[in-house]
Length: 225
Image (tube, rainbow, N blue to C red; front, side, top):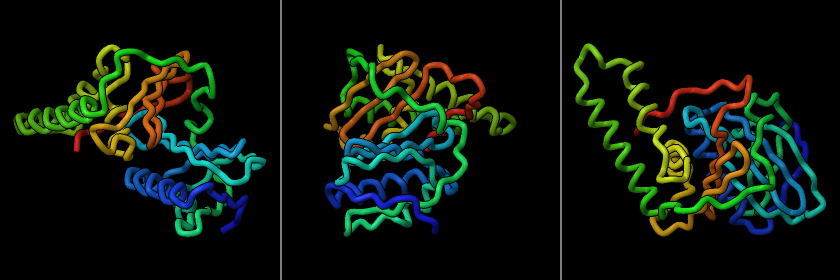
């Protein structure tokens, strides 16, 4: 594996957390790529799980505050280079980035959105949506039990917004699926910056544009599982 740079984490647990994030991302896409940005002693890892139409962001603290890095790599190869016990990771060779890797959320200019439901309420909303999808899917007559009809039901359910935040429910589903909403008492913030919305917890963030940029294709919302 061709190496670009080693990453040394400020705490070995940061390496373990990154490895966990990469494993969950790879469950959705075995060929997933991630964009890495490092500077000022911080690392941001961006990924895009298929179907959710969102960016997932995991951050970590680095020992080397002078390290500057901006590269897109294979998520699988990066995972292979993570040494959890040693608290470090080997960055693999760069790959040609997918279109989403060139359209990242802004670094600044974020403002807090008010009236954000609690972590418990968000987890309950996802559970209710999953149950609704399954019930409506089971109720379909045989002649309508098609992928197109299931996709239509999924789009309807997961496009619903959360309260008055403007955040689609699929973003919350993505957050829970990627381990960012691990418990009902998790702290949740929703931020906005221009066309971007961001759901942030201590475990990671989910960001999305309220309208897709020109030239970026989107995929149907995920079927509940």
